[in-house]
Amino acid sequence: TSFRAATKEDSRRIAELFRISSDGVVDYVWMALASEYPGLEPIEIGAVRYASEEGSFSYTNCVVAEREGAVIGQLCTYPVEASAGDPDEPVDPVLEPYGRLEIPGTLYISSLALFEGSRGMGLGTEMISLARDQARESGLDALSLLVFEQNTGAVKLYEREGFREVDRAAVVPHPLINHTGDVILMTAPV
Image (cartoon, rainbow, N blue to C red):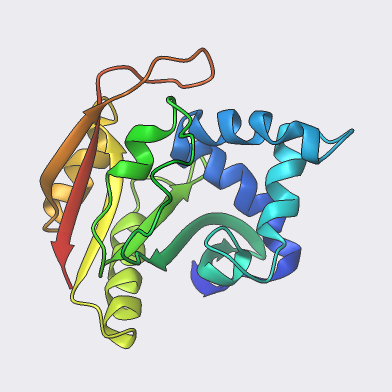
């Protein structure tokens, strides 16, 4: 397995992997954006968004894991800036917990995912190490991420890698979101 910077051509695979890591949240986002992308299926909306050269959700913020020329996983990160959100701007109640749980000044792991069959081989640990390197190169001293408390395998991985819970919020139930309970904000030093 090798790691490389993602290319625009990887955008569809990035969207597929982001769908895995978000457990339905991104499906909700893409469905909400459907009117801006007439005729596209949600996964196609995700691919178009990841094909962008700019913004947090761009292939330029992703590293892909490859085996025998096929993308099998990804790590997508971006620095969290201090929020300057408009207090009068309406906030989608389903997405509110995810927007509120952030730590400015950290490198945020927005997606760490592997396709079935490529898990349990230490690749997640390697990708966290890559994120630590990215944070150091950016002058940041911590990583942050969100994980559903019910995703116990991911929680255990992150705890093994030095992540600790700093906050949590209740998941707002929605048919597209595959979890209930809480979403946990975790952080780790680089």
